Image (cartoon, rainbow, N blue to C red):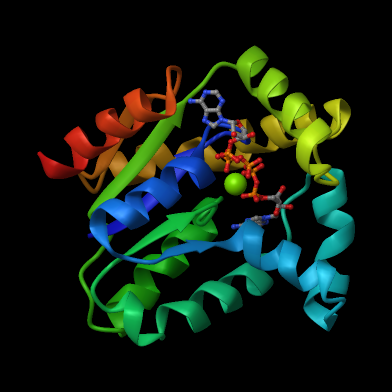
Length: 188
Ligand code: AP5
Ligand code: MG
């Protein structure tokens, strides 16, 4: 299984991705987590990414593509993977397809789109802000992240529909309810 999780900020990609890791025994690759770790460690890459992340803008394609390319070479990703937060625009999706081809792997098997309305997103992320204090969980930045998602990432649903692998799943409900919807799609 080579899964891409698509969904607005706060739609549950990270949360459901972890549950899918446990269910299917394949690794999750999160560009957001990798970038936050780089920012925390103050690496060169982290310094390059920080301003864009704090503003809710996309980090440069070459940076995130480099992260994913390196991670996909690891042996544990050979049997499959779950991508959380990548690809986020058409250029990234095309590069990912080229990468998989170069590695002699098949293409993406499931692009799972978690659908959640904007008000629920804002409410979830403002609540998370009080718990985790993520730098980009401020209302104006959250709204910008949603706008960028709609402009840059939503077109990927059509991109993956053209490959016959796109599925939209209702992201509202308990963690377990949403998870069972995803498992049903993947196991079908
Ligand atoms: P990234 O880390 O990918 O953030 P995001 O897409 O904004 O999404 P979140 O992590 O906020 O939400 P999520 O969908 O994972 O939801 P979660 O499970 O946490 O990216 C951050 C930044 O990094 C980007 O803005 C960009 O700058 C940069 N970046 C990353 N990838 C990039 C790329 N490919 N290209 C360029 N730049 C990139 O859930 C959210 C909250 O809701 C949690 O508190 C959770 O507990 C709660 N929750 C989850 N499910 C439910 C439920 N069913 N009901 C109620 N609450 C729920
Ligand atoms: Mg996340």
